[in-house]
Amino acid sequence: MPLPQPVPDLISLDLLASVAALGSIRQAAMAHGMSQPAASTRLKILEGVLGVELLHRSSGGAQLTPAGRVVVGWSEQVLGDIHSLLTATAALRRERRTSVHVAASMTVAEYLAPEWLVRVATLDPDLHVALDMANSEQVAELVREGRVDLGFVEGASKLVGLRSQVLLDDELVLVVAAHHPWANRRRPVTPAELAATPQVLREAGSGTREVLEEWLGEGGLTATALVELGSTTAIKRAVESGAAPAVLSRLAVSGDVRDGRLVAVPIVGGGPTRTIRALWSATSPLSPAAKRVLAQIHDASSER
Image (tube, rainbow, N blue to C red):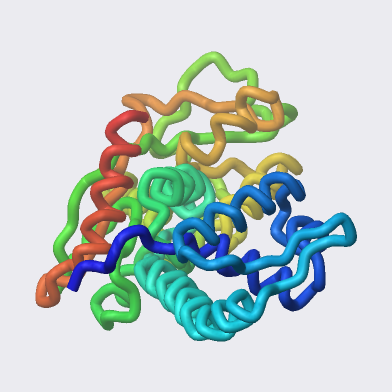
């Protein structure tokens, strides 16, 4: 039912309780972060709303009247209940922050996911995205097993039991150290030359390795490994040392090429390209929260 009017102000009731506890309007005002005149004005208005005198004021300070002490006693439950209400609603706000668990292949996790997750956090702060890193094959398996809501991979061809959405295209680039013999060559490297030359390769199961092998396989060629490494950063450092060339994502090497740490070498006919995809289960529908994450990431990818 509607409350009778006027209704006493909760902050003023809390202020009156502080006067009772601390012994003066000045100390109560300080505790509430307001000036003494402002506190006095609030208490006078409260007396007017309730229609009773709450304080005896004198040059020596202010003391609660008998009616004031009764009002403070009655207001304890009201103030306790409002504190409980505010605590409970704060908990509800925290519960609204939905978690979405995603997994991304190494290249995506290192060079795309940070931008994506910042966008989600900025535009949809009620969503919390937890990110796991793995190679593309492992990411696909995590999605199939239902251990993550969404996966993000490059060059995935084994999509049994999965649905996918293309987010963007990524070109693979042949890179060498600045002092490598290929750094200053005038002719593009042929696929046959590339296949015959030992390379620093990603491990089996990575999207980068899969795309490179498929591209060479179209010409009946096979990549030759000098060494296999499990991260793009490690491969770049190995190439920079002059150990061997590597074929890596343009996303991953653009800064290194710009700064002169690596040199991009043209390939006859152009290098392989691949798609960056989002994956989710073909048998379990995406949750509303996962759909929101996917929509934000799709928009971010479209703007690149």
